[in-house]
Length: 130
Image (cartoon, rainbow, N blue to C red; front, side):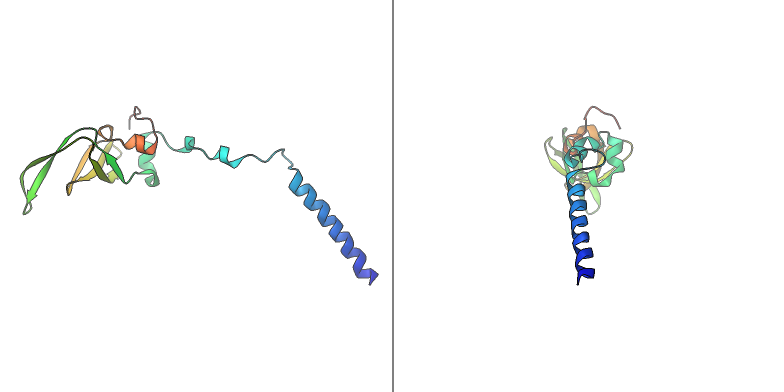
């Protein structure tokens, strides 16, 4: 019985000491706060950085300028309609040349990213160029 009991007690004591030192001290000092390591500063603030990371693309943008969109009847252009500034449109694609492809009244259009609130939606600096 002593052959089993003494080694078992020894292992329990050794395990308790290891547990104490493992969870109360760190070999490199304090464990860093991960919330400080993960911040919004890691989000690209340039248009090119946003284009490269599809996960950052907003689903929609708001127009800063009014647009003329074609009115199509039976596949032919029948005139134009004006879309007012402040209209929210679905984002289809971001191009590397600084244009945002959007869906406006059923028509696909490409407009300059500066004519939308894209950079504000992503959190980047609007003054930065593509």
